[in-house]
Image (cartoon, rainbow, N blue to C red; front, side, top):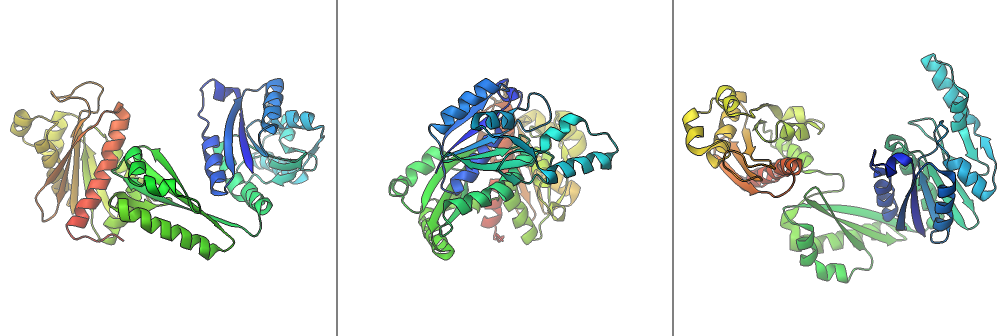
Length: 418
């Protein structure tokens, strides 16, 4: 089955919002073994949308639409498809009742155009919307499958995951099992990783391996097909073992893991507490950790010491040290880590300082970053980075590298991974 994704909305063409829906849907379809050869974006114009549909029908079996199901005049996706296919629109009683109950609950009158959201293509299967008003639809006609989804990601993603995806799986092959498993790597670039395992990529059949780079990380998605779930997992585990025997030192987690979640997991497992003093990252290190549930069991606190005065007054770093070595220095990073650990009484202190860019800072080139680690019972350890990205990219990379370095340091010191 080949698919095309058509995103509808002039705001996408104007650059007002990013088309994250296409990325999500493509990712989901790849797990089902469905090929996506085209992404199309079209504005709120019925004639241009009809032309896009005709083009998609000439090259895809499955056409998935996102957006244009709302109550306003420019929401015209289902009307245009209905006209193109010669189908009437009918009200879905369940959706209409839900919309009426919503307005009654909030004590506001329901305008007539909100009824429009309950209209569906006659003969289509309704995809329930548990996070919004407009239902989605799945329709099979003229050897094509059409899926209509709402535009807001908070509505589209669960609708596709729990409503549309099971219906697609049933249509593909009820006797087939498709399983995907993601390996996550850090500290190695996409090109280097691909080069290192090129012989595996060249010989892949089943399972297949798909590399992807994002925010300095690299993932490998291993997808296996079989008529038996255990056989599919055996295929995946065999290929995983082969890959990790070559690049295992850069592997930090799987599937939905992140560097932050794995670090928190390791800290909690070893009953370690942590604090941070941040200069260029301005709280980003702690913010990333705070996204992880249960982090209160390890993250005690920290300070943002963006200026030299803050480093002196908040952390108690000696002015003579900063005068001698500067704020973007190995000595400053180490002292920040030591002082914040002492200030908050934690097992680990982390200090981040540097020149995020685009201008030099304290006589150091943009992208020069120092990270200090103070682990109770050990001498301070520092790592220097020389990054070349944009300002905020450098800040995020510094945080991720700090997570990665710290996990490696703790392992070297004898602390266990969960």
